[in-house]
Length: 313
Figure 1: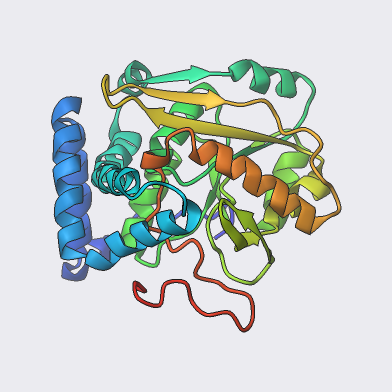
Figure 2: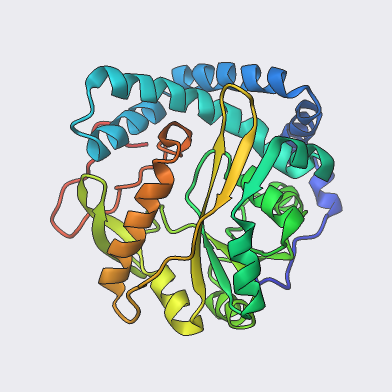
């Protein structure tokens, strides 16, 4: 789907096969209007319950943390696992907040820092590749930023057309538009013309357009070369940002960091290593709020065994 092909509502979504999807979206909408402290508690409870039903997901979290932090004391790692599981449940509510909360309520809960970097680059006519990581509350961070400065979100269409419609509408609510992750030309054009494009290079997207670079203690993490492709072709600024929830207050801080300097252009391997260092810094802002349930190291170099042999899903 290109940026001009936003999904539209279809009456076929009223057919019985889509009722579970419609019910789920309706529940998300209704729950989003609960007081925040209730959503917070429910989210933690749901996270713990889901992990009991899906133990392999918990195993993936444990495996990722053991791979990335082999020297971390076991007690500390177990505590991080438990916190991450609770945050995984809360992410369901944070998605509802991002899709359905009015702007006023978002502003009340999210504080933005570092917008001066955006305004400076904007005054220079510079395109901005906003480098995100898949924190549990990324959806809410993108919504909060978009209220102040709309941009383009890189988007992966959902295979369920009914859910895809609601997902697109929720994500595009405070963004200029969404753009299919396969539409590289569209991204480059947007960046060349001074637009803001959201991009998350921290997941394992497979062998296509990728290389292997260190990430934490894992020496060979499959890493997309898309970042260098976009930066080289558009000469944009690469700007990391993070969103962190304060567990005590329930407030969120979205921090725009300074643009990455000395980006290694025209060298995909060096760029992947450089970006992974920036990814590490972003994750460590709040490691308990990162999406560790993703099998980040599932793609291995030829001849190497799967790191998730006992916890694959």
